[in-house]
Every structure is written in structure tokens, then in C-alpha cells.
Length: 446
Image 1 (tube, helix red, strand yellow):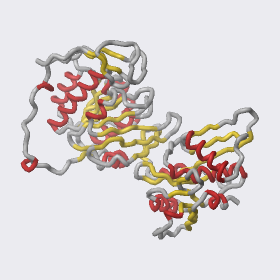
Image 2 (image 1 turned 90 degrees about the horizontal axis):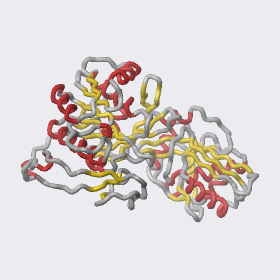
Image 3 (image 1 turned 90 degrees about the vertical axis):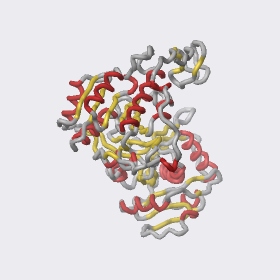
Image 4 (image 1 turned 45 degrees about the vertical axis):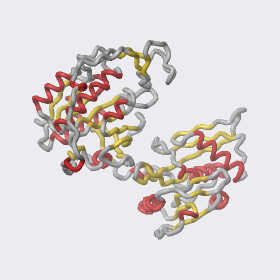
């Protein structure tokens, strides 16, 4: 038997210490250290398999299980791979349980056995949600249990085609004395589920809690073990949700799925640009349409700005959807290269719909929106703007320009201001307006 000395593990960052201390020296979190007891003897210390020549290994085409949610399947790369371990994280109340119960219901409608395990809710609570989602069939099994041994027994008894664990932080293994949710329990339970799934070809979906910083609790050890990591993002006060892939061993990590939270559950949104622009008012100063890329999908967003005279000593800078440092940089470029005086003005920016954008392609659009608000003159209503802005006032090239412009053209926009270096080899029906400097772009505010 292998004997391991007890140690202390930080629940925030996962750092290991030989003795307890009040403050973690790695992440500076207080009272976050928990004793990690010596591991008992288990099958992880046994030899699992012999080595093989790569030429002798027979590999079949990966078999995928469809969830009948096109957005979810697309993010995964075409569906759930047999034997894969998928982790879904998100803030409390964002809709993780609703999404997974909806997936479980869809798969079970196709005569596939699904076991939904909840360590946080009773069977009656899950049933009430299932009624709201119109789920009721004879192939969906519900289990309220936190002991991993009992869960494995139920899996062996039912032999499901898919298992959902909600959530991994509530599951514990009785061989370990740590409390559920501790690093040791989460790591060992995930490892056991991974081995179970790989040996039997059983796909398993895990729900993971997040910390106050928005990272998956566990901490990063979970992301290293699982095959796929998905984040379910959005604001509780906003109706749409974004499913983003952060790690995927069986597909691309450049995909996102868009959903709308309704009374009857989650509804897929296939045209998010139209969703964002349906309430747009035309001829409003300080507003601009910008084609951005979320994952591999082009989306048209409306960026609004408001510039008002400040009546206090220190001007206010507030930004929703745009990183505040990027806003300050664009304001500095406008003052220096555009000859605007913003030292005594309050500045507010907002991206309609609550979406967060951090790519540099919004720089020129943000600058023109601010200039439009200062001059109180609206931009052309059928124009989109894109381009990165340098500190010298130059407009730099951006990526995936053709995909962005085609999305704008599809929604009826007629003109596009873009970097001149992106203008080469573009053959589109929309009118293209190439610019090289910020001053050239500002001339279109009339």
C-alpha cells in the first residue's frame, strides 16, 4: 500500500502546503486551506493496461450522441462523443440544470436511457422542472443521491446511454474523509467517473460550480481531467445565454451556442444579430453597428455612447460591455488625434443586450460613436463600422473581414467603413469605404 502524508490544499487555487496557515501564500485567500488526508488503497494505484504499438491499435470513427439541440451539438463538434466526460460551469441560476434536463429529455425521447443524478434537489423538485419543460417519458430516470458508490450501483443496474451529474461538488466517495466539494473529493470522484465512462463508453455530463471570481471550483484540476469544458454565460436579468467552449478534445474551441431563457425553458437563437437589432432606433447620435466575432459566428451589435458635460470635479467613465481600459485608450486617441476636448465630460458606453466584447475590431466603431455623441450628429443608419485603432490614429487590419461584412449585408446594411489594408481582394455587393486614419473616418459624421 502506498502511504501518502497528509497535507493542506487551498480550495481557491489548489496550492499544496505541508502545514496549515491562515492565508494562502499563492492566491492570498484567507481561511481557504483544508486538510487533505492520506488516500486509502484503491484501484487507481493498480496497473490499468499494458503498452501497445501504435500500429497495432485499432481506432473506429468516433460515435456521437445527438442532443437534438443544434446549438449545443455544434459547440461540441457534432454531438456527445461516446465515453466522453463533459464539464459545464456557470454562475448560480444561469440555467445549467434547465439545459441539462432539457438535453436529458430530448435524448430519452429517442428511446435512449438517461440517468439524471441530482445531489442538490429532491425528485419532486426535478419533476416540477420537467413538467415546465414538457418532459415525461419512460426512458428518463431521476436519482437524488450524493454517494458515488450508490450512483455506480444505479448505473450498473440501469445501464444508461447518458449520465448527468448535478453537481460534481455535491458528490462524495466514502473512502475519503474530506467533506463533499473539497479538492480531494472532487478530484477523486471525477477520476472514478472518468474511468467508468472510458471503460464502458458511457458519456457523462458534469455540472461544476464556479468561484466568486467566475472560475470553476475544484479548482483547475477538473479542467485537466475532463474531455470538454463548457461555460454557460449570461446575466440573470438578460434573457439570452451563451454556451462557450473553453476546451474540447473532440472539436473546435471557437464555437458558441446562443439560447434564450423562456418560461418553458431554453430556446435556441440562430440569428443573434437580428435579435440584438430588433429594437434599434435610427438616427440616434452616439450609436453605431459593429460586426464582431463570437467564437466562429459573426454577430452585429449596437454600441451606444453618451457624452455629457460634467458638473463635478472628476469626470465619470462608465462602460457596460466594453472593457474600461479600452474605453480610456480610445478617449485618449480621440483627444490627441481627433482634436476633441473630453476632459470635462462624463462618458458612458453600453452594448445592447448585455453582451461582452473584448476584441480590437470595435475600436474604430467606438471612436466614431463617441465622436457622433459629442457632435450630436448620427451616423448613417445603414452603415456598419469595423477596424482596430492604433495609438497614432491609424486604422489597422482585422481578421475574418469577409465573414463580418457578409453578415451585415445579409441584414440589409448598405455601407461599411473598414481598414484600407482589408479592402484588397474583397468583392461584395455592399459599398466599402476604406480608411487609413481616424480623421478620414470622422469625415463621415456630418
